[in-house]
Image: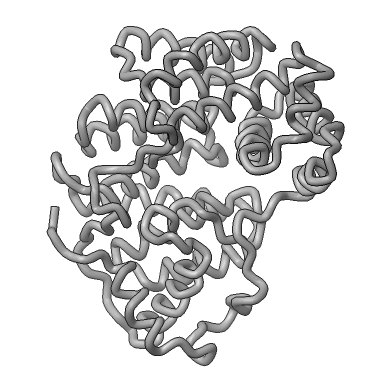
Length: 349
């Protein structure tokens, strides 16, 4: 790993000193129009109702995803509802009180409890206590892969052995062979158990992407592995050609979705991070135009405490590089804001 300040940090310094709307490339929305982690048209009403103390729309939303086997939507909504409940939990407590056996409430509770355990100084003990709750959530609907994604995250936190991981992974893929959330959880576990063997993580991601349908989010798994290398680089070196191939695969996936679509927003934000790390300025600008107003906390919060501010400054930085006609350069690591080997949250990289 090259021991240098990240390119993103350089963007922060330069654009803070020279910010000007004239440097924003055509086709990008104004700063004031950019939203961070904007919910889609289905989740937004549920969050508004929850803020007013009404859990009904959230319960109906998750029940619909379960009944229709909309597992990718279900995973996203569970995560967002659990995040909301961390700071405003009256509606969620009411939901659990009136429907203690509701499989959707149990799933949100498992996600919420796991996130709390990961962020606690008593993480090891709390993670141990979370196990039975996750097991109960797994019993909610035999078709549902989402509780098994939570179980995989839990396995990483408890440093479960490979045999136990393989058991959980088998349960997950049996329910949905190409569920993106489960694949991301597996990638995190493998990165942790391999102690930073980025080449092996990329092997897993490439194999999964090759087996997935062209429009599947699993096609973005290699670029997620490339992000891990650029953000937390070290150990096994990864050749530039593999990083470029991961980015190219994600570019092809992005092209399958409409511009300014909130559904692939996180993938596009992640892809932009990697393209900046590869100094592929024109490609990064193309993705920024595809992102439109939909910035996401991940991956920018791995670098800066102000992810939206960083995203806006980065747009200016890329605009400057494109206008200057900068050529692409060899990849170099983009260090996380902690400067450590990686994050400690349940979502990791």
